[in-house]
Length: 271
Image 1 (cartoon, rainbow, N blue to C red):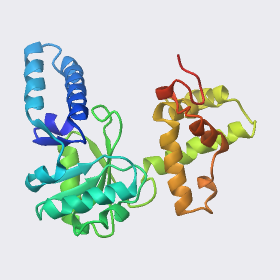
Image 2: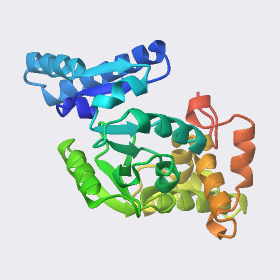
Image 3: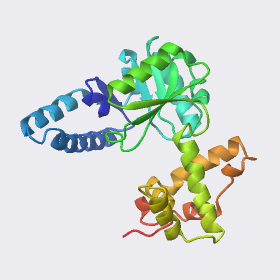
Image 4: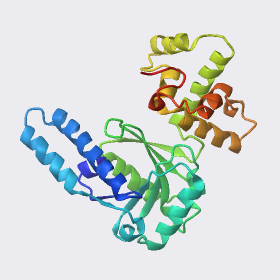
């Protein structure tokens, strides 16, 4: 949606037509919200903005058939290395030589994904933050093989979207998650030791550190399964790191399918 609004021609690819129809509907709803704010004084211009953006976004269920004419592929599928590698290995055979591949992964190493292709120099990480239309930050991840030309192209692309790029090497969690997830886990450890209640920890971080959400509120908002997946991956990578040690209460809640707001219960209960 953001790329389409910035004037790029976009092909949205997913597994089924049904998923694509729902995605397109969601994009239209988001665009109308943006247009309502952006063109508050001129509703007609807002309608034109929505229609123009939607017309630049087409859909397909076959990535290989559309990748030959693209300049950039941004992958945002399931956080599973094997699945990502299979996708990129296939696309690598059909994409033009100049096409840049990028992964939106938040937890896997870009190098391990890029190694499935023959274009490691034209491969990088492009990590957007949810909700993408509102969040300005994009982490641009440069592997040891990423060329300077590829890196600069992605920085320019990000800026053209109206985003603020920051650069990071291919290190676990990049910048934001590498700082954020251990902080969240330390909050849970503090609670598990009985040093403070969830509610008081959340209140302390909101009023004392100026954070908009406390760590337990944020964990429930993000999804406990998502955080556990990141932690499991890091533990597998570096089992001796004290920051990456398993969290009993997190593992228990995920096993009980209490994943946070999306399931109605996580560290807190939701109506």
